[in-house]
Length: 274
Image 1 (cartoon, one colour):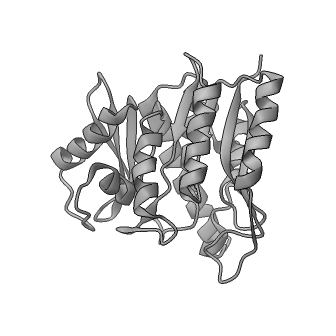
Image 2: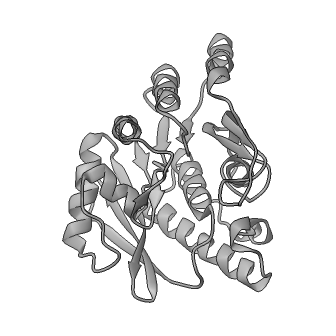
Image 3: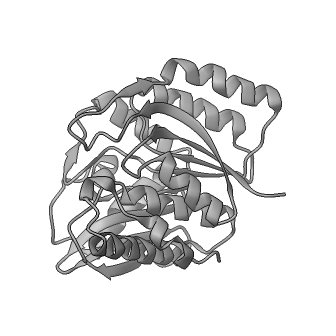
């Protein structure tokens, strides 16, 4: 049977982020995307104005119906969560739907550039640690890895032993695979791969443009699909990193505004399925 991933994230109508990115990428990689909406937005919050319909109070009934149907998933993937209550709902979802072989991927979307998002409270940061503890794979950026491991943030100068200590700390919560993304290294951007029982690895790609919105959604979608498809973790991280770079280069070529994310649609055919 075709593999399925339950994707718990918001749906933004414009701006290429969250579920509107994940759905086509999972589909292209041969995995059925089954959304659990946390909110409906006219466009993502990186724009000056947006409309949002918070779905928190309806998530319970939505998920209860899936429970009645006895639905099963090979994977569960989480993205941006807007409140401590939503994090609690997601923990319950994982408890109810995660079986022995279910692959849980948590993208702890908490902040960037050394700052935690203004919507995140101290309680939410604590609860996110507990959510990460329920995952098999987690994909924090550098800011989020620092927050999860209680490590002081710095813009540059990261040594491998420092990254190892952060990844090991995060892995001690529960996930066996951790990738710390977006580590600046001069003209490169690096991803640090930690997998229990294996040597850590650093994968670097040339920095090709200023950062763009929602590249993390592209990255984690590939990691999630590859995970349920049995692709080795380090190969998947390398593939995801390379594909994000292709997306950015194409977006620059087409003069896509940075707030509009990356035009992954133009290069999706270049994404390997293995």
